[in-house]
Length: 277
Image (cartoon, rainbow, N blue to C red; front, side, top):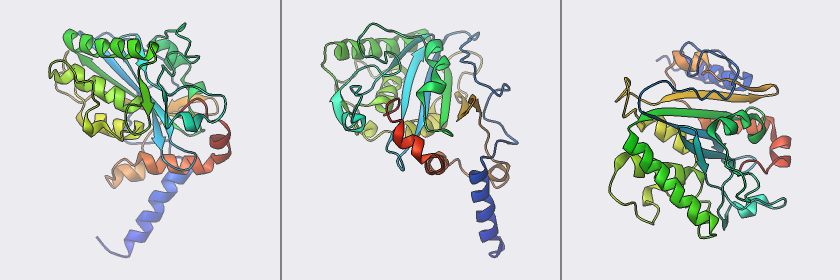
């Protein structure tokens, strides 16, 4: 490549990110442009859905979340909710449901559809990205995932599980449940697998994008279906990779995208800190 062109290309790519870039030659999303919380599933087998509010380390703290559903049964894992000093609770505290039961009083048990319909009120700041990952699995795999979460909820209900930012937290627990359900190494250990320590929602998204595949149905063996949505003032809208990034075959850089959005919307990120963790 002609060396003098490199600074120009870099400048063009930075411009794409700074302008928001809502067009793409290879969309990552469904045809509709407005997210309506759709959960319809018509393929054989069972559907597993992973919902990820992508995280960025700075600025504004580690804000993001991940949850999982088998068909319409939804589960997630979060720290103790607090009106003040939520970031401190998000380092280490007693674990409990997050979007599934916002009050953590064990009176709510939300379906996947209910969680997705409320998604625009659950993520922040403006410009945040949400990934919806869907995969068809065999019945026995779906049941192993469901059993993992039933056992986890039983422990949380009894105050026996501890949320730790670098150990058991939302993204690592979703990844662990998929590992337990899809790899079937017998009875899962009570210890979080070493490779899942330090997991983040964005790292989980990157891992599933590269590794998760359908195990049932007509797309068996094919990569999971992934759609990306961006929070705007009027709700979640379809997010597309910039044309320039497509043409240059650049890798996806969700952390760079989110870091820019955090800077752009820093006041909101610092004020509204209680819906993500």
